[in-house]
Length: 61
Image 1: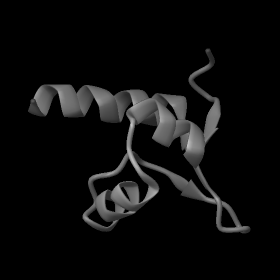
Image 2 (image 1 turned 90 degrees about the vertical axis):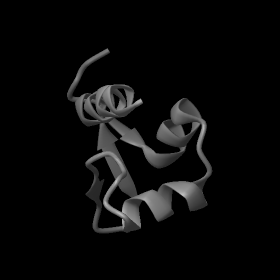
Image 3 (image 1 turned 120 degrees about the vertical axis):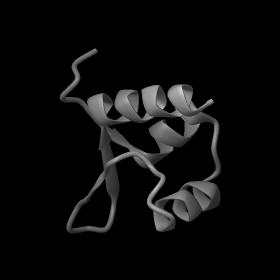
């Protein structure tokens, strides 16, 4: 899978097994994966950023 792939929020939530509300709480605390907000309000997260976030979570555990 390409590291340039941009994932939709439902795809990310499914992969990390998290509710939308929990994701937005993490986002408000600055703890969510790096993401981009499109002009239509949708959020996209790159595969590389999600993988980096996972690695950071594993280091903290």
